[in-house]
Length: 180
Image (cartoon, rainbow, N blue to C red; front, top):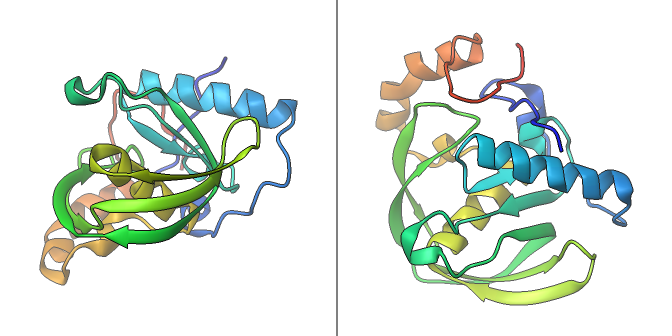
C-alpha cells in the first residue's frame, strides 16, 4: 500500500464532476487500499478519489476511530446516489483538502443511498449520524464541490485569506499534500 498525496483547495481535479466506475479491477482495488492507507495516515474519516487526484466516483469511509462509531466497519462506496433525505442537522466539518479550516454546515440528517460496494455489488442502505455526514461530504467531492461552498457569504469572506493561502500552496498539514 502507498500513501498518496492529497490535493488541496484550488487544484482543478477537485472542481471536476468525477466519472462513474464501470467495473472494479486490480487497479481500482489497489487504489482503494491506497486510499484507506492515506486516509488513516492523515487521521481522516472519509476520502474521495478526486482528493488523491483520480476523478472517479469512489470514496472510502472509516469512522471506527470515533468512540460512538467503533462498531461501524470501514466502507467502500462506488457510484453513490442519494435516493431520499430526511431532516436537517448542523455539524462542524473539516476536510483533508482544506487543512486547518473547520466550519459548521447544514446537511440532511438521514440519507437513503444507492451505491456499489468493493465487490461492485449494488446496495441500498439508510445512513444517519456521522456516517451520513461523511458520505454527503465525500459525495460533494465527487460532484466537484467543497464544503466551504455551502457556507454563508460572511463566513466565506472571513476565510478568504486562509483559502487563498491554501490555493497558493502555503498550507501546512501533518500528511502529504500534492505539490502546487
